[in-house]
Length: 487
Ligand SMILES: CC(=O)N[C@H]1[C@@H](OP(=O)(O)OP(=O)(O)OC[C@H]2O[C@@H](n3ccc(=O)[nH]c3=O)[C@H](O)[C@@H]2O)O[C@H](CO)[C@@H](O)[C@@H]1O[C@H](C)C(=O)N[C@@H](C)C(=O)N[C@H](CCC(=O)O)C(=O)O
Ligand SMILES: Nc1ncnc2c1ncn2[C@@H]1O[C@H](COP(=O)(O)OP(=O)(O)OP(=O)(O)O)[C@@H](O)[C@H]1O
Image (cartoon, rainbow, N blue to C red; front, top):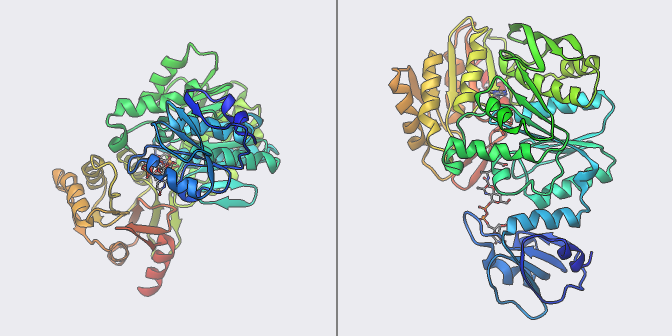
């Protein structure tokens, strides 16, 4: 594609120097990935300034650079100066890949908890309706049978547009994706043509990045001003109510869902058990019984959001029912590990105070024995949530075993100290075992029949990040190994 074709439509240009009549074969935002005839977009990041790597990108063959600052480059390199490199990257990428999101029904889900699960439920509903749908989120991107790991829950705009292009080329007609608050703040989904926006809930998380809960809310809110066809909002959630109030003047219609509030899509007659939930799904077009194979009230919410999305696309209630009922759960989300000790061992990705409350509430609905939790908190991430998670664990559980999560550059013992503040506040019963494998082993060895052990925080992840090293740590395999060792 000619550079001028890309640049002519670019917003926010401050200045252009150099030849635009050149061919561009690639766009990169990481100099290390620059190739012959590429455009390098220099981003001032949180850790380093991409402008420092312009010479590196040019050495590797970049013929144009997009910058925010004045720079000196070789004469044969074109320089496009813009107001905001991240926004420019999003637009360049969309143009370069020929606006692929316009050819997809794009459904974006935002919220603190439930995004991943809801994407999988929607995928199931669309597939049951014979739609061809791709998925992008924490567990990677799925295009047909191909699953690719992604660096972020919501990838950088360039990677996102490339995935959309792939979906269109492979004949998919829709895509469901998680839209993190970071991605909304950092313009990763700018120039993506979003049809439906879904809000699950909002509670404390990521306060290292957003600073206040209000900023976090404002970031999430942006999604609902981008959508064309529907906004689907949880009307039981305090922030969901705020969103409904704010967006009611927009042309995009709002569909609400909930259990306790007046909602368009509503669950009634709910019955919980340790394997799932039954409820009556009520919609403006009628009601139908749902038997979900994922336990907990939060699963009712996630399935209501997914059902509302199916409803928005005119998918029949029978199809929605069939699709929801065939989902057996998502890896690492309330995943039960089979054992013959008559205990329940649950692996769950809950890693926020709200996630903890929800998952422990669910356990309380069926637990007959003691409740034991094994968990740590991530290093180099929001520290404010550590004592809160400690307090919640100690309030709900008979024993909290404090251990290591992805400690990253922090000392695991320091992280545990932060958690301990909350545990001690409510005089919780605790034990510290920093080695996560040993912590899990202790929990299992010291359990009695009917006890419930929740191993929280890592969910689907199969590794542990300690310092700069990534160690293999597949919790489900490790639990099975331990069960074998101690049988
Ligand atoms: C805080 C944050 O969001 N950071 C994101 C940001 O990185 P950054 O701005 O810090 O980048 P940097 O390392 O300073 O580098 C600046 C620029 O120089 C470039 N560079 C760097 C080195 C070099 O040799 N050459 C070069 O060109 C880099 O490619 C980059 O373009 O831009 C990168 C590229 O898009 C992201 O991968 C990175 O996400 C990091 C990995 C991250 O941890 N993000 C988290 C906080 C995040 O976004 N999480 C949400 C999910 C949250 C949830 O719901 O759980 C998500 O959507 O993933
Ligand atoms: N609707 C919900 N409300 C509260 N907690 C939930 C909800 N859905 C799931 N959870 C809890 O949060 C954990 C994470 O769920 P899920 O991965 O679906 O959320 P997410 O929004 O994708 O989170 P992340 O982006 O951090 O992966 C689950 O394992 C469960 O314990």
